[in-house]
Length: 608
Image (cartoon, rainbow, N blue to C red; front, side, top):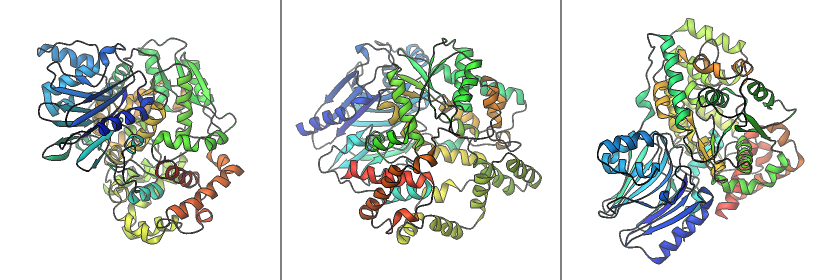
């Protein structure tokens, strides 16, 4: 796990370019405090900051050079199946000098070319520079766990792991991207495709690679979740459940490969608690195995009781932190700097505090449950997508049954809203959204609603499985970006077993009616993996996620004052976006208050 940065210009490299990459390295030092390196030639400079996880010796130093000296590589991530790939390459005649996955990655590229990407089970963003042909190859993992940003300025291609590194470029135009702000405010989404909050900084899309040479810059997709969507109903249901369990056990096993201490970010929900169960039953973790939790004693969102129930079944050590509204308020600018761009909810501040706690206890790798909701249709609004599928298929008997059971399980609010939103005509959708966001300038709204991928594609899902694929395309990455920044700012690597590509691809092909049943989301997960959690967690009807007691936070006088000040700042800074008197017009929910504060502070920290 590391930070990477570089520049390539076929007109030539200057000493100022080398100094720039050194500055970018230092800005990203938190991503890799264990080692640093620079490579340069007449057209390219590569920079690297290393966080040593596998093979802690100096053999893992980067930029990493191929045996023949032709290729220079910088790499951020982990290839979990590197041991198996190394053995495959040995059979092809390759020899290895290190125990690193870095060497395996580069030799895979030398042997398989672009097709190496499909061989990797892991998370990665890397750059391989061909010193002979002066060509740069950039690759990024399937679902966007590891970040890679770029900008092209005056014939130079610059790239880095974080936005804050790229804004070190002298003279960079830091104009904001209005479409990104629109999708953030209206749909609570960021990191949708390749956009950032800066118009002139883009992201290499997940599941894509890029080539930069004298012929220009080209980007191509190499992985598409929609390609795996199907409605398979395996002949044997018991074999289906066994296959799900088998793949997930192996996904967790691979992510325990580490030469440094490992822990788990633990909530009281299904996803992370099942990870603990798998580790306890298949990896023989010690009784003091560290887990880390955000706890809110006395609050409805507190999940301490569920974690205690899990701890009664499995032995582990749970460390807890209780993020407060005062601490969050005092850390707003520090937090927004960590995250590079505005975040979509205060729960990510709780995640930040959990990562800080893990750092204090010496953990350098954290497993968590990210991705379980996308695998198994965990959010309550997935009921709406599934009900819509049943209507489209004219299965009125099952529709009526599921519609009623959703109500009986008290999950109807967001489920029925999602169904209705898909049923109404486009013009009415726009009118309802404009009314809800009446604090926005109408011209701004009507211009950018037409270009929104969320509006035009995300809700255009005829089946539950297409909806799940759309989540991997357009929604999941904003969670992954915040997890990456929250952990890496404390030099911790986050690993996500639910996003093992074998697991994702397999589940996208399983029929939707096996995932949602009897008004319950995650029905298939409970069947296949439920025994690995506590009964109290398995029987939960609510879904909290990684939540904080937002309503109480926003009632604090300092938070109200802060939000009023942020609203005035947004009125002045973004006059083309906001009407006057924003604060009274904001919907009374935590997301609106949070986003106004985030946007204001982001502009102050990164633009002003």
